Each structure stands twice: as C-alpha cells, then as structure tokens.
Image (cartoon, rainbow, N blue to C red; front, top):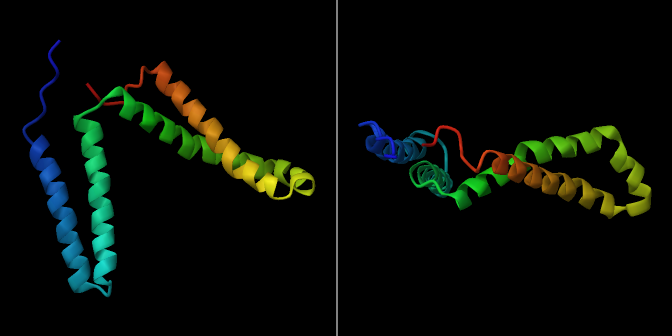
Length: 133
C-alpha cells in the first residue's frame, strides 16, 4: 500500500515555523525589555520542541509513539490521580505513619500508574497516533 502523499505546503510549513520563531526572538529582544540570554533560551527551547514535533509527524515509529503514549499517560492521568489522592485525604491519613514517605508516594505512585495506563491505551491502539498514515 502506498503512503499518502503530503500536501504542497508541508515542507514550507516547517521552514516557516522555524523562521517565525527566530523572527519573534528578534522582535522580543529589540522591542521589549527581555535579556538576550532569556530570548536565546526561549527560542532554542521552542526550536527543539518544533524539531521533536517534526520528527514525530514525519518519521513515526513504534518506539517514539510508545514514548508519546507513556508521556500522555503520565501527564493528565498521573496528575489527576495525584489530585484525587490529595482531595481524598489519604495522604493526610498516611502522614503520621510515613512522614516524608507519604509525600514520596503522592508524587511518584500516581505518575507511575499513569504511565502504565498510557502504555496500555497505546497497546490497545497498536501505538498509532491520531492523524498518522
């Protein structure tokens, strides 16, 4: 089966993204009261994020897609589980018995569970991201 062709604007889109980020960096430096090193750090971080997005969209593979599913499981699911632990009062119940252990449990266990849930969802979807060929 032949992979679907990309539209004509696909390559110019990524070039325009990179140029607009650099251009906004120049505008921020010259027209605002922001230090050069702060602008350089922000532009560099943004270009790295765009590079990762380009890699994920243009060269998809199972390992990268699995990592994305795990990260997507960690961030919303793990965070919501942590909030549920805090709201339920379970941490306040454990605090006299475990001390700092209650904090460590609250910070690590929900995110680990979220990672497993994200991997499970990815396995159910054969590690295919939405809108990928």
